[in-house]
Image (tube, rainbow, N blue to C red; front, side, top):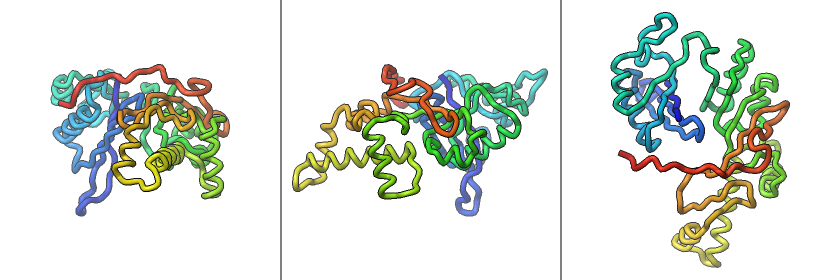
Length: 283
């Protein structure tokens, strides 16, 4: 199991430009974003510490760029690690891994947490440079036709997204109802995973209001929500129990094929045979 982290430009706070530390787990895409003042080693290590605490455990590997806080030099293509980072990583039982600088072929995958515009720019640059790794994956913010149209159909080919719901192309009645209502109330707005999840949350809220009776109160509403189990929105999502406060238990991987996102795995429906692993309490 591994996570990846990167540093990027953040907003200006009190006249000082902030830096954003972004870490994410490889498969579930759980993200931690921290606003920091600098990229110094103590700050980066503190961010890694906070990320691991919020992950609830320590992955085996951390993948990142060749910042001087991580790699001080390369000799015969072998990275020479910053000894202080090595010591910090050893404290957590973590191994830091990097790619060769200016050698994208040494990395066989790209995982991005950028928005639709950022991903479109990245896909265009990769297409221009003829760089096509085995895996290009992003978060489900980009699961929308706008991602393909903005990046270009040729540039977006193969882009993968992991979803907690069936694909928008699935004949599931709830998914189709969401798209029909979106077209009626907001014509021209592209459907998306965020939109589907927001619509599904609204369905749950309305259900709880109805079940709370003619004179609902905050207490009756929260009690009704607490009693809901295995909520699936007519099979659009895997079984969800709000009071359990767990993440998605089912998944679908989709990829751009031609002019749209198509199910990659499983070929239809949801994969729900995985299990959540208890990594222990936050230390």
